[in-house]
Length: 135
Image 1 (cartoon, helix red, strand yellow):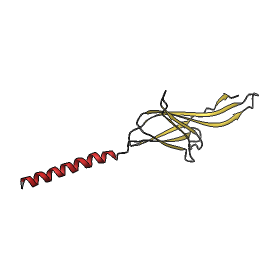
Image 2 (image 1 turned 120 degrees about the horizontal axis):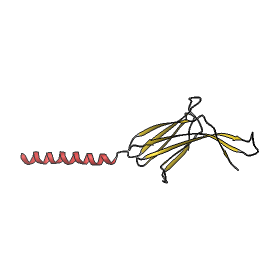
Image 3 (image 1 turned 45 degrees about the vertical axis):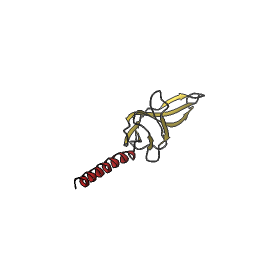
Image 4 (image 1 turned 180 degrees about the vertical axis):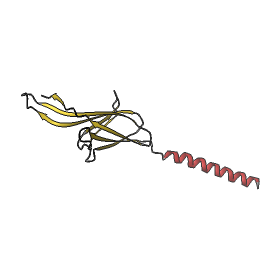
């Protein structure tokens, strides 16, 4: 009788440990991020903003364009601290000079991604329009 109880206890222990270890393999280790871009002036979501998520001096990055809800979603395979840079083209201006200036607005934020979680980040486009000479 003691042998049957001991054998049953061993089977339960092995089954429990197997379920624990094999279940751990199914764990989602990706890191998800959802960036929402808001206009500082109108307080509305911005469609068509360029989003770049990266780590300084690293090749790890993601880029994309916000959708109609002002959102850009992506994922990374490991947690890290990322810079989020947003630019929004407002057009070209040659009103005051014969030179053409590329005009845009920008916004920035920083995020810390967590394994198996979605991190939500809001970036506000600054009201200031920046003009850069483009030839």
